[in-house]
Length: 286
Image 1 (cartoon, rainbow, N blue to C red):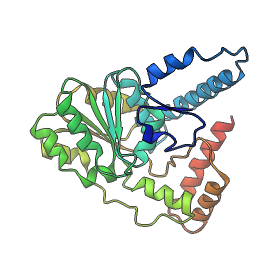
Image 2: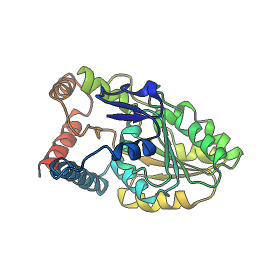
Image 3: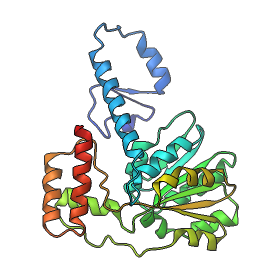
């Protein structure tokens, strides 16, 4: 069943047996009088158990103190510091994966991502627009270094108008999403994904904003707290492990086969990637 205010979106992402067009709250209230309560709670209990297990796994990943710092740590600690009415923006990349897993959308929070277009670079412009429209709300852009480098001049825009924007950059000197797609979907070694290292904290400072940098997972929460508490535009460059794969919760056999092929064909740092994959598998099994 799918409820959507826009009838054109019914069945757009997943086949449905019953499509209902309308406001979700009103539709559910109208529907509830037609439903009968079930005594069998197995389905509900199974779903609740799965969610509990998933959240426990996320908490374990967020508590990792390995170095290089894991991107999971940054997203996990950021989530704990967000206001319930904040506005979060991302563009498309591995930053989207970490945001989707670790950021709990709660209260009056809003989340914007270039999902349908799957484009990079727009995370910071989205945030600037949100800060202009809602100057009293916390606005956070969680972006990757590849996306930010495409429209880095928007830092000057944020500084010029004193926008209350906080930019969290996951820096791994790589087009991470493309790299992992090449490996897991095509079975090819990464190609053309390396980025020239940029000191994003220095760039932010040069544009008139404040710039921070963190690479120690033990200091991540404190730095993020300082960044979010500072007035005006502030950027924090979080240097993270570029060999940390954003694996889905369930990995298909085909994805595993492609990954093995990619590693065998000469992917750089193959040993480190295998180590990360083995670590994640062992943690899930235990």
